[in-house]
Amino acid sequence: MPRYSVQWSDPLIGKLAQAWLDNPAIRNEIQVGIDAIDRALAYTPHSLGKSLPGASQTRFVVSPPVSILFVIQELDRRVRIVDFNLWP
Image (cartoon, rainbow, N blue to C red; front, side):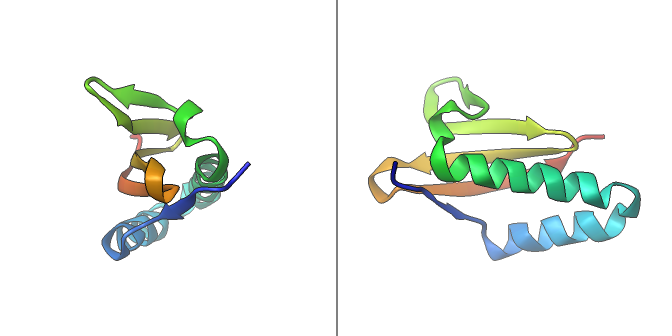
């Protein structure tokens, strides 16, 4: 099965790094959540999370304590991360 390339923008990488620095008590959970989502996105992005109403290629997934909004670009075999948040 061909892999998808998972792309994070520089601003989102910065946002993720800041969340990791600001939350030392849950750093491991943040890392585990992000790693699990990244691995799944590389192989099965269509089956991960839920699609947004009216936008089947835009989906969100939660792996506590993180949530990710992403867009699948099928022709390029890419998954673009649109947003990242920590669940309170």
